[in-house]
Length: 168
Image (cartoon, rainbow, N blue to C red; front, side, top):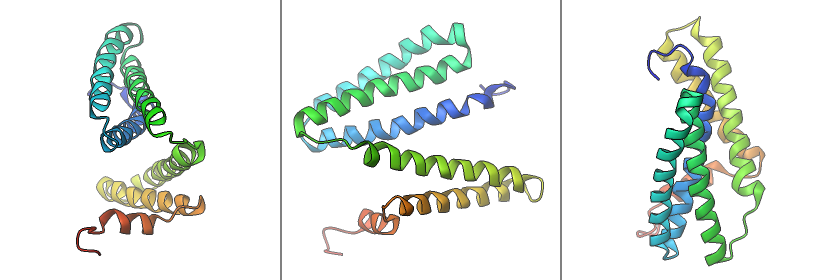
């Protein structure tokens, strides 16, 4: 990937793989929490094996794009397995808006903002400053998007970092 002039064009595909990794890790944690640790471990193993196989099959005909597609495919397999087992074991209803649309749209808005800000700032200030300001703008847009879609990022962060043992 390094030193390849066309490597940057595959970043959106690899970003999609990272997005799916979030769901894979989260659903794996849910499986662990409901006592299905073996299924969570099996999902990780199947995901790893499928990534290796898909990489071998796709890199030769597709090049670097084949690796990105292999990452997405393997994470789809693992995440799909986890969602299936969670739904079966916990009778959990997956609402597309809550589980997919809201985080995806917010993330896409933040990523778009980061790209626009970085392109604008890069010719005006130092690249590191442009990167930091673009990241800050992306986080702000992400949080605002979540708020517009009905979520409260401030409440979420407060609950995330609250010390449950001390009652805070």
